[in-house]
Image (cartoon, rainbow, N blue to C red; front, top):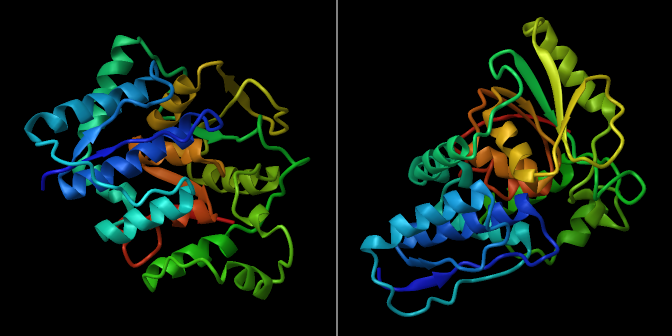
Length: 291
């Protein structure tokens, strides 16, 4: 199909994870329609992740006719955009990526080798935990029961209705009468939720080491070794290499789902997660969830 779309970024306010997932969502839409992709607005241009995406786009475009600009149904609302694309392609976005865009992972591996990225732990003998710390904490966000927003968006996709006018009434029916946005946002997790999963995993993998990967800022209160880097691309690379991961409630963690080598993934439920199509009637992949 002739035509092209312009890949947009999310502006300077959002960081690597939000940008990557935003790009991938649009690339999936273009790929499904066989549209040429104009991709020249990326943030983090030196990151191996955005470079890998651009390498894919350059190869993908080689046999495409650019044609006329297609006015993509665009919204900067992360959940609404991803949900729209799920309904459009009739598949959860992680599965679509792994089925059709796996070349990006090959590019990523090549770039990591060139950059001499080395994972500082044994990927086959380590449980990796990602914590969201620096820009959200318990002074401005709450640790919430994520199934409420998760189920709301999942059910929207199951009935193929992305009209969110009933959102306030839905949260009120769940005894949330104010600040319902706090129940579908990037937020820290209480230590006990993570510790419960770790203790269950240690029964199965008793000799595995526990490593926490997180940003250079913020206080870690879990009693495990910590890896911190000033380069978010390095941290994200570590998450993609781990075989067992416990992820945070953040788009940074969600971006690793597309690119991961993990065999076991533990995910906190929240609306952003279900907007990828997970657990909906379009889901072709399963993870281990907690609230």
